[in-house]
Length: 358
Image 1 (spheres, rainbow, N blue to C red):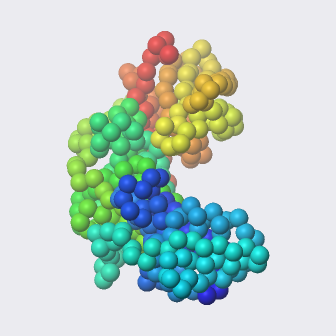
Image 2 (cartoon, rainbow, N blue to C red):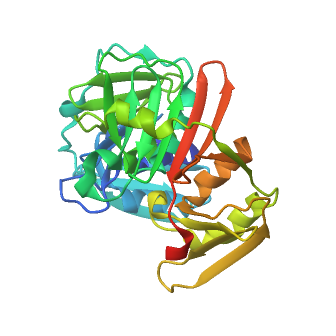
């Protein structure tokens, strides 16, 4: 069988987030090919995507297949199965390879089988992806506070995330599932937000997102718990007689400079400290391994003294939408917010700390 190398690589890229880093469950570090699809599964996520021209079924180690395809420059590769049926034979110009093929697929695919499912169209999928991405950056990483490590997705279109000190809420289009809400672990929500979906289906502890144009499906376990009491949340987001604080126009460049020192494996762990006092705003961050640090200072038109931390990419995205924030009279919290149009709006609240303690 002759396969377009770029098309196969593209399919593997789509399903890669469903691979496990270590194989605690059989074949979770492999690409599984069956029924014209390539599938990955890691006990939290499963992704499937159509592949054209594949005429075999079985599982192949992801590192081996992806590494081989990614390092050749041939547009077409030839694949065949060995006489014993245990190897996928690979031929591309002068390159020959035999990759171990496990014909018995052991992934628990029936656990999240969506055959015959009734998919519901999402009115504004790009809005939902953006809301999930923003809220995921606000979640906690401490598993002792399980619900705060998740993005709360409600069927009325409210998407929320918090780590107990920061809170982000997006209000958008109602979503077509019958449960009131589900909690999506933030590290999985980040991957969901990158997936081009258009439909949704929620069933038996799994939420499934589908790209109707190409037929790919992103399935993810969710946490079956209720989120923080909504009355508490409403108290957090309410501001009376707020004080307006505009940020300098050069803030985006400052975040770009300082943010590179904040880079971590997981975006939720990235942080830039912001200190405002004596008419100046300072951004600072340090690297994880060497503890190298950087500071950047600019003038700001305020006499307030404030100190807080947030994810640099989220800070940048917020400032691109709104160049100012509101401070409550007690100076205990600040809020960024914006009405984007239609039914979509968002607000981001940060609890403040005393600059003298930093």
